[in-house]
Amino acid sequence: MKRITLMVVRLTIFLPWWYIRIMIYAYTNRGTEEQRYGLLRRILTKANHAGRVAVLSSGVEKLPEQMGYMFFPNHQGLFDTLAFFETNPYPFVPVMKKEVTNTFMLKHVRLILHGITIDRDDVKSAMRTIREISEEVKKGRNYLIFSEGTRSRKGNETLEFKGGSFKSAYYAKCPVVPVALVNCFKAFDTNSIEPVTIQIHYLDPIYYEEYKDMKTTELAVMVRARIDRKIAEVTAADIA
Image 1 (cartoon, rainbow, N blue to C red):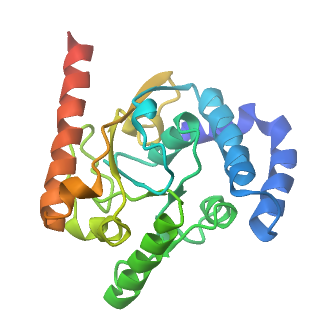
Image 2: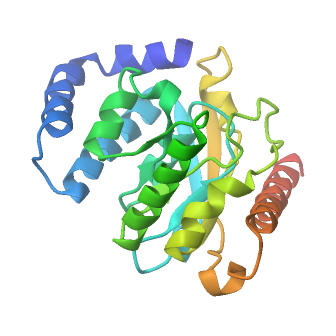
């Protein structure tokens, strides 16, 4: 992809040093979670700027004060997670599909953050992973799950949010944070290096007391509806 190539070319001078630091953190236990996350955040923010991607955000101040919550954003494209790294000051772990476990760099991001992968084709394994995530959240780690399961490939339109992806939140009894991503698909999913602005909006958290009596499918519908409303609001303002 042209934009990724642009990022690499413009950051060539930094790559050897970054690579060494990434390898150290990925394959040793050095550094705190904050230090490891900080390294990735600095690198990926520089990469965004080098790739001519501006990230506008809102709502970070709405995030729960106590760590141990889960992000549930819509899924537009390959750039989505990078928007979180640039705008979110607190460490989080993106849950990755087993299919990308050994993809270059994604593998190292997972290792640096001590991340968890999920095998969606193995129900028993997926349930064990969901339980594992919930235990991690109870300990105060923040996780990110794309509950659509795949990129929408429909621009700013969302797909159905899968109820099963919310089970970890129920087990952990943690806050659920809906996040609306707007125009993220324009960064990597179009063959262009023109300057682009994407948006990430952290919405009001939904606390366990609010959703404990709901079915997971009902919570999925609620989260999707809130994200859809925000996307509609933002895109309407852009048109106006």
